[in-house]
Image 1 (cartoon, each protein chain N blue to C red):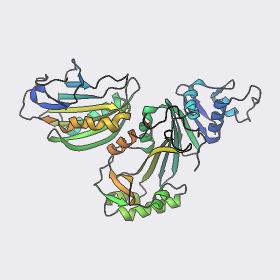
Image 2: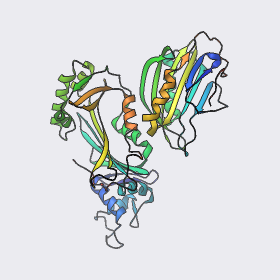
Image 3: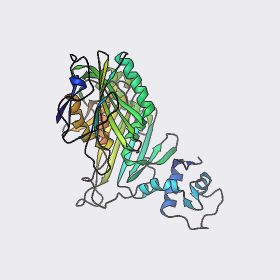
Image 4: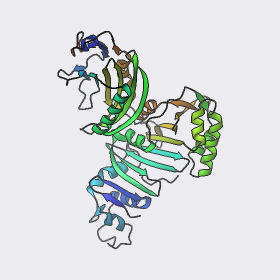
Length: 266
Length: 163
């Protein structure tokens, strides 16, 4: 696809290959004359869209690309459902960046204020008004959770079917919604380098996994007996989301995440 | 925490010690208290309003939802539930929005309607502080009291003060 760039908002819609080219041009601009100004080079779509001007990345894109280049922490958000699966990525810094998966092979890339990252996650997961389910805890297997987030529709459907039977006695309306294909499983991971003293490649982080239907919300809680599904309200989900980003106590001074800007297709 | 009586004793609410009371609230706003200044960060605050409401609780809240969505930038309603507020049937709302200074704020509102008087307690804090500050603000909601025997709210605090 041809990228669509809005210089007023700094937002660009593009495919994965073009995103990687954009990042490369921001990190190491091609020397003048090294790339012909024809319409068949990898840079041509970026030039045509206005994201590259005279070989330089447009200034409206630079804050987001700076976050990709030197992130303090990373965000990965998988949103899966009966109809498909999307992987959104974020790079946290003073100003953060998000690459939102539009589900059709294209992505929206833009800067976002770091304090608005929980709001962005809420919008991408459609967190909002839901009935409050009665309290309860139901065991769930890692295999079912993996299946719910699988790339292919068949394992997602099989995992959802497994949930229908295990939850019906505790949350019948919720179980019926899943049976009707009305479910969404989302997992957000925020990761950052471990504080000084750990292994160089070690990372710390927080994870929140939620099973959402129009009948209510369940959260994945892990205790000594393994993963459990626990009834949760939108308020509780928001409380957890708002506390996911690393604070000063989590981060080592001056330590940045290794750049990971490739569009993950896993 | 410090207990304040508002609207001639119609409402009493607890506010955190050391918070600053805004001295000149608008009509209908009985109380505004804000946390101490912290390096330009959004200051958590509590706002209590008592207004005449000539409609049902449901219609009042539907109107409030429309008003908030229209007035607040980047508004996202996250939760809404019926619950007891100040000892009376009411509701709680959770939402997030952006301020004019482009700060992300999370607001919880508790509201009830008694004899044509609508009472709202709003507790706002920076979104990234909600996981910790939100619980402190909820203390005020838990200790909100509304006395149905007080017929004529005066609009002025009658006791206590924010130190």
